[in-house]
Length: 353
Image (cartoon, rainbow, N blue to C red; front, side, top):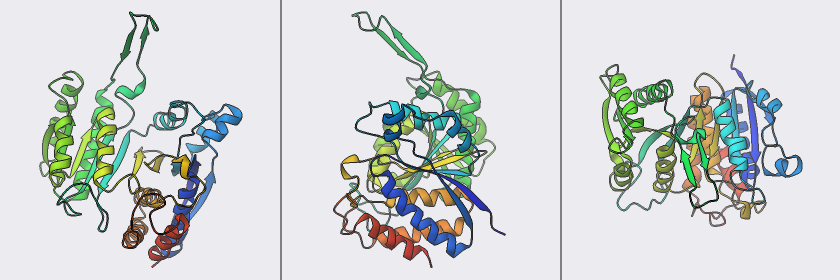
């Protein structure tokens, strides 16, 4: 008997509710096709709730989320809320509180999707970035001295623990093994300047590599990684890196795979509750117009199903995405040739068989 999954749904701000609605439509389609059950639990976290109540992520809600199998997130970001409040109060709090220590970002170019890279196609752009998600510069360590004066000092510290680094690296090695493609894992860092943090990363990387003799390992500075992602993306299979560098290179990855309209990511706790989301943001100027591209949210659903072990359902979703991409003229909002709901219908129908 198939498991019944408990899925938390956080539609969020802007176009988030619209794209999540389409993802849920596709989920319903593949669940019927594959015979698994699920229950959705909706949460109104986001800008509107904050403006009304001053709440970002109440402790009671966080405790409920701990009991879920997964979280399906639309977007966080409201034009009437100061930047940083929602991001820190919801997104970062979820990642840290639920110990979602892996940020997983596939960079895959599908057929019929344009890339800005000359002479590169789907065979050249298919890799994954594993980003450490709960340490580094994002922990908020540091502070100000003499703030607002000519002698002001601002300090931001990067915190890297052996435990945090090693578990991220082990996840990346296991993923490289599971992908079974080039079986190549690249450590992205800056050992020539960040000589303490990346000394730890590099030592742990090559120590763990001894346990995986069938995986080829190499290293690239973050600036060189950016260069090669543009010039020779086919060189990469899996890239593993720290929080800050991962944040930067995954946006570059999104661009070479066709833009924010197709890019999705997962915040993973392999032993706990994980969260999946499109990465394009809330796009408030398009909210309510039924013109936003929902494929990134549907791609996040695909990742969520893979995480749950519903591999056949995930494959059906990917098939539906590829069918839609064969019809859509342009991934940009308002230029697809179809409405948001029509794209959702198209993917759901194609994924149902």
